[in-house]
Image 1 (cartoon, rainbow, N blue to C red):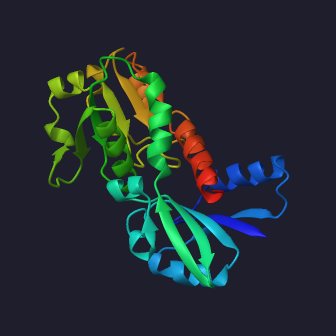
Image 2 (image 1 turned 135 degrees about the vertical axis):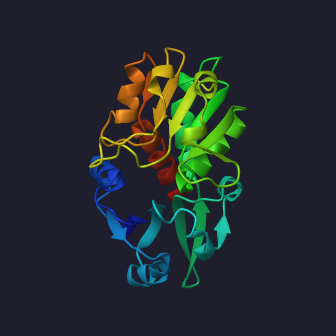
Image 3 (image 1 turned 120 degrees about the horizontal axis):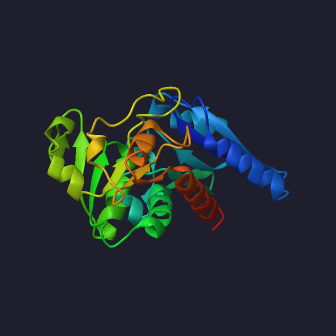
Amino acid sequence: MKTYGLIGYPLSHSFSKKYFTEKFLNEGLHDYQYELYPIENIDSITGLLANYPTLCGLNVTIPHKVNVLQYLNELDEVAEKIGAVNCICIKNHDGENYLKGYNTDAYGFEESLKPLLEPHHTKALVFGDGGATKAIKYVLNKLNIEFITVVRKETPGTVLYQDLSPEMIRSHTLLINTTPLGMSPNVDTYPDIDYSLLGPEHLAYDIVYNPLETAFMSKAAARGAKIKNGLEMLHQQAEKAWEIWNR
């Protein structure tokens, strides 16, 4: 039996479990399973690995994408540059687990974003600055898209929501929500910006996928902006993880 799973906390719902369970079923992989491992403290990963010796790979979600790094034996080059991991490949070497970390969020985001980009999408506003945001920033740098990170509590290199000027919102035509705002069950929440300043030249991308159209997306679409949710990003990163686990 080969076991894969997701670590994070809380894990009230999981795209990954449904996705991989269906994948195993459709591909006739009867000796494969995907489980949820809600661990509040990342220190629990050592016990998890000891208790589940058939584990071959893990996905990592909030809040462990950064604090899991200390438990890994090696980082992929992209994950090292990003400073966050959402995929772990587990190999057993002489009875000892060897954990290598990857970031497939960056791949998923880039592949789902690129077809939507137009020549005027040269500046972005990134809402939030958590673990998932690191992958977003990496991709924006790779694509030579300038960005401003917008947060509620000021930290170095960021801008507060209330300090966004109308000109900043108008000129930064790519808007990316990396926060949980709008995620079920809190579907009425959204990044606090002046949506009346948006227009057809704007692209509003939300990494949230539940619901499929968040309040952020709806408010942007009402002003004529193009919108995109995080579902394709999830599909892309999941397939990349599967490729990594089976190398």
